Image: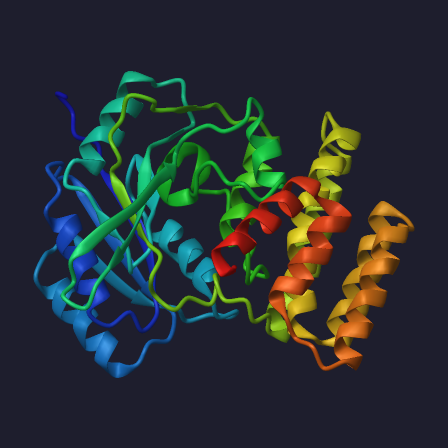
Amino acid sequence: MTEMPLVSIIVPVFNTGKLIIDFVKSIKGQSYENWELILVDDGSDEKTIDVIKSLKASDSRIHFSKREKQPKGSLTCRNIGMQQSRGRYIIHFDADDLVESFCLEQRVRFMEQNPSLDYAVFKGASFCSDELSNIHVINHRWGRKRNSDDVVSFLCNDYPFSVWNCIYKSSVFKEIIWDENVKIYTDFSYILPILLKKYKYSYSTESRDDYLYRVNQKNAMTSSFISKEKFVSTIYLFRKVQDEILSSEKPSFYKKKFKRYYIVQIERIFNTMNDDYISEFAFFYKLFYGFEMRMCLLLFVNKLLKKGKINSRKLIRFFVALLYNQNFFIKWILSLKRYV
């Protein structure tokens, strides 16, 4: 590679502790050296701020700023980072993950060899770490195509890639801002509109896993608890997705596929045992998909469980799968063998 274009790496930070040190170490260990790391703090404690300042002082390529505007959240931080970025390419990473040493070199080379692309998707893996900080790779599912139409995969809540799998051409994506009102399913909220607008992209099928996604940390995104803020955000996001689907080239087809995502969310909301959430989301579902006897049965079952003071995730999953997805129902039955 004769030219080494600048790569802007944008990372929101919020109370990451030691993990941010490990992450920055993996960036500083890149074989590709022409990068800038833009760390945008979302209101961390002083201990984390001191760590970030120390990291900034160790390398002139590391930049640090604080979020000075509302709303609070990682997406506001990503937008701030994009405004500050100077690179030909933009990459969005997370502060608690790890990056292989060849990551930037692999991605930049692919984009330079394919100048017609607006962005590209690279392989990654999930990992967990033990009490001694040893890394254990769990799977290699990220950055692999799962459906001929990626829109279908995302609408079915089966993401083939996330934003950290991608490298984006700055000239195209610097002005495509993140929706700061979204508090949950943030990657989905950014990627789906891009797919529907048909920006040109490709999977780098010959690439090696270059990003390690941490799955063993307590994370609000993976928590089964749904706060009021996240519930409101879900309604907001799903309404946006509905509008995007209805204005797409396959409205009926995509609407049918999106029902899978609705059902996943319904199960999570039922698990909260919050009557207000349940009734509001059921009504919202009815507005888009019309009256369904299955939903009425599910609401009736929920009332029976609550009346009997039964809060069982397994029972809720049983009825959701039975009524809405027989394939999941079969998997649920098979999973019971582990407890027999």
